[in-house]
Image (tube, rainbow, N blue to C red):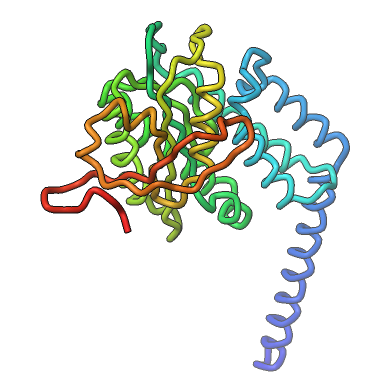
Length: 279
């Protein structure tokens, strides 16, 4: 057989491979939107651990945002892959919720900490489900270990963040800063997450394994106002600590559901010889 004939056979074979790959791709797209497969995937999602009806909807607030990102990336058309990806997110959320330690029944003031990741939504849109879940796993494992080691208790995981309570306001601030440093050392496919945190001290209502009330809402809103790597605390939290241990800068703050006279500071651990105020 001639070389020309060999070359023709190779070219013909390559064309067949390309056509076969194209047909396979078309088949997978059609299969992904197949009514039967979508129904089966939805059924699997309903019986997944994350489908538990007893989970507080607030605990799923950030997980729903992640699920929304997956839905946006997959489009609005019915998709078996999307349903399975959502099931993975919900199952992961249920897993970390069940793994959290029991929250002690304490009376008196507590310092409430909220954390989440800055810029996470934008990154997650193009990162892929596996990378998103791996990042969330590492962030939550790292943050939870630090909080538990410092005597705090995680009350709930919120997808890319969490809520925790401490009896000691100073320890809560230190834990927030330590968690921020630890999270910044995580790298997923070249992406380095940035944690932000907000703290408020008050007397929230203890219900079961959770805390509820205005003080919880204040802490959450303070965290929402923080920038990447920043720890914001209310005046009530600073008053429960030795303020000389921190460099502080008063932040302009106003948020729905919080007192109009609420005073908020950005704080950093202060070393000897440093000024008390941030520039």
